[in-house]
Length: 248
Ligand SMILES: O=C[C@H](O)COP(=O)(O)O
Image: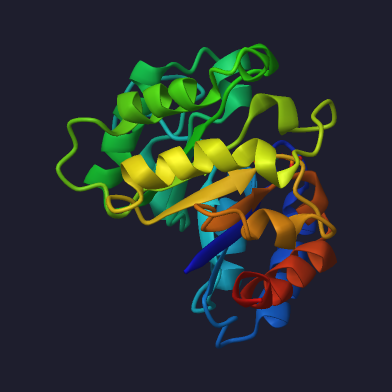
């Protein structure tokens, strides 16, 4: 199964997210795309609207973050039961933007993975090295350490999604990777975790032009897309072309 989806990050109003979700539902169709699991991760304000619009469709809905405690005096936070109540199936954890700007650490990532699994949701665990680590040749070691910290000690990680998102490739300051630049980390993730997790996705400057080549990298089981997918037609094109990309 190829997992392909987007996070809106801090973009889109509720109305914009709803319009997007409705178009995505129509474009994906009620039976979906064979071999592809689409997902959409809106801002927290739009989870309930988007989940209602996609209810019964093949598209899964996620939250961009959730706290590890179920409830309590954690002003500004939202718990896993709360995002589940809003209709989320997936919880994104440890994105590099949260690690950089919101003090997310390997320890908090591990707590959030456990909370997500405890409540029956799907953790989407993000990992990825900085430009400095990449330049120094330490990418694989860094990423395996991050994933190990997030998942080691868990009996069952079969519902977990890993997203390898090199920091140097993400966002408007990132650059598109050449497939061979991400191949080593993906091979290592497949060797170490391939039998124990649901899928390993690639994310960072994915777009309509490079999606198929990135999907063909061994060890890539899907794509986690930011900017390019905020136009729903781009995501629909990438979803539609994905099955052929991996069979040709
Ligand atoms: O969550 C998605 C990733 O951070 C990738 O973002 P991007 O496709 O805009 O580089």
